Image (cartoon, rainbow, N blue to C red; front, side, top):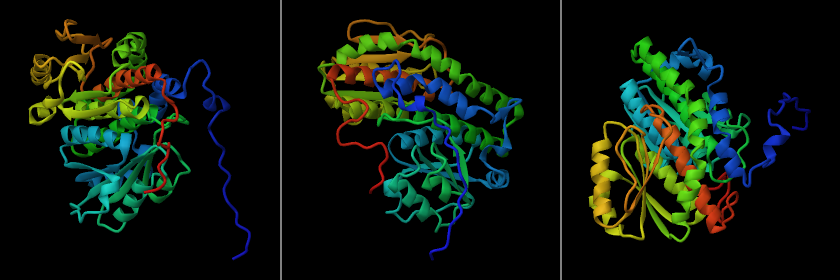
Length: 385
């Protein structure tokens, strides 16, 4: 109406160093190596005395989260993979149903909203068009409340959501998301612990889970010491045109993220499948020219995973395994094993097993000579449908 508008002044927390590559050849490599600090920043001030602080999600959050009886997560791309992992955590530790949906599909079905369902959206930029549209559609339905997990405090997603949890990844310049993903997992870990507390989880278990979260930054640094070994391993992918990624349980979403990273920046066609689905079609693709990448934590599904991998070797497939050091995977004909530097608990595994797959994609892309930070046909923030 022509009158003068007064707006609050917000000081940016970004430093000039964030826009420089420094010692790194590409922004993506820099951002992979920043993950320890980014995860530490995301957890900072949110855990005390073995407990996730109630104020983490805002002053109105405790009353709403205490009422939560189900969770519905929507996201796109890498953020969708983070949501898939969170589903395993929420159902295992909280004992409540959790559904995960690609945001671009959410508006085009007539979904049923269970009572007291928390609607969670995940986005690095907070400007992803499909995710924003999903949140606006959710506002018209009977959800308990909406929670945004986001990296940009000034974004539309943050402004339009009832509750907010910022990831504090800092500026991410490379189109292929790395530190945004692992900080989303850290944030979702915090959410899982809080929801589990309201569902009756004992304090001793909360202390155990928060300790596993706070150990992550140091463990990420240890995993990054595998960089040189993974660089050598990537030479096997230099002339490949296809790759298959396998995982079981929550690690299936890690495999999906690994496949996405490889196809995004190296332009190698990569697909991910639950390892148990091999016999239902993907096994037909396996031959000596098809590298098969898998992550093998020492968990309840390990023996089943080993059986699936034997099927791959029996058909001449080349296996590339990132394995727990306490299991008996050995290098051999057609089997290439890189052991993780330490044993990793289930709650930590998705964060830590993702990092070798990021490095594998990066080094394969370097050998391919692609534009790693700005892959063809892609944009950092997808602001159109």
